[in-house]
Length: 156
Image 1 (cartoon, rainbow, N blue to C red):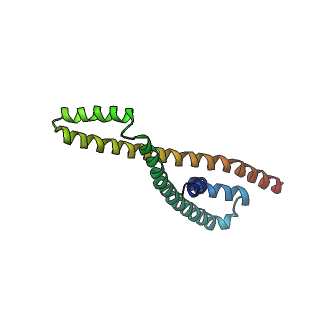
Image 2 (tube, rainbow, N blue to C red):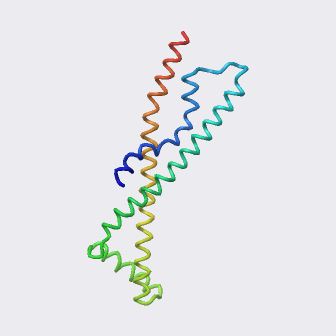
Image 3 (cartoon, rainbow, N blue to C red):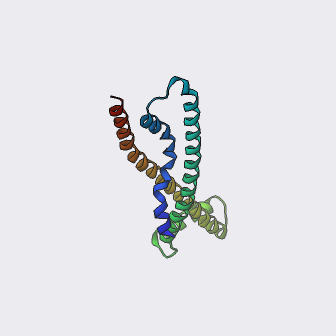
């Protein structure tokens, strides 16, 4: 399963497909005045489709990576871990100070730690998607520049 996730990670930044309009313009050159409306409509369709695909892929990657990160974080939060025991004790004391019984406080502390791990996993998943978007954008910059140079040389 991990190998499959690793293969799909580069696709996460594809919401940058909205930059397709700029790439198409650079590649094909400006539209003739009588074709401006059609070109604008096609660019808007490409943006909408690219945005929809990008959002869908991003949400999928966020869900998958959140599970991946949560599994990793939970593996480090073993009950035998001194760090886990320390945090559990501190949070339990906090809930006892709030008026809970010791049993309730311990259950609330375990739930709080679980929520903390879930929030951290989600944050890491969003950071992953942001990183993938940055990588894909960085890969498209040379393509856009090369396309612009080709259209400039063919025009002269």
